[in-house]
Length: 305
Image (tube, rainbow, N blue to C red; front, side, top):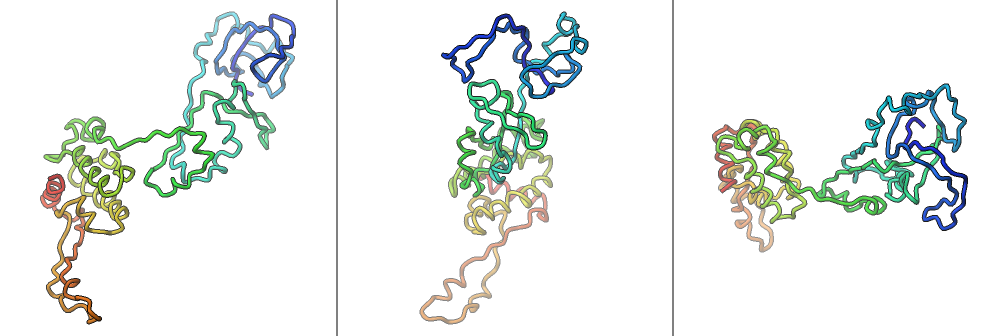
């Protein structure tokens, strides 16, 4: 044990209280000098503790200045700690948490009535989760693996939806000095329009995050974002259905292939009208990286109409 959570002086004899609201019934009266702290033991005593309940203290190892007020304890107040697990839904919960899956429950944490500890397999030391530890797990709600999210995980976490926030592009993005404007292209409005169309065609969980446009500084950056992120994502969402992709992006991103020479492409079969299929238009997505700045800007303007 390397830290101290509280310091007190015993002021009374042992007594038994069978009506205690906690799981312990044996007590002694204590005058607490410092509570709710996270004090390194070396600041008070020149030796680490293990997991014994009672120690014989060597007075020669005690730092007497600490108790005379020469050293302030205010710097050792317990601070909140945050552990972030990205894509938590993709992990094996039993391997990530193990016995922690029980210890992280609020009432099982150290200092609470139902506090629990486990014995670590190698050091054989007792281990529990302190109340000042917050665990944040992130996940993409459009990810199919969310459906199979472990029940134990669902019970121990509260879920907070984080929807795209186009306004952050204007306040915190690379173009914040221009309020998110790239020439005459309003990036927050661009994202808002795209997401509104995606929500109509699919659902709100498949909307595109504002992070895609946060680093855009020029037209070449925006072309790369469309080529490497937005268009591939739409192709995945709509399984290559160019009709629905076109409803999101507009016709400026598509090249229509001439099919006049395809009228005799099909073999004759039963009563099927081959001419009807032959006249069906074929579209090809432009490579936005190879588009000129002028053509790409025109395509963006058509998208936003």
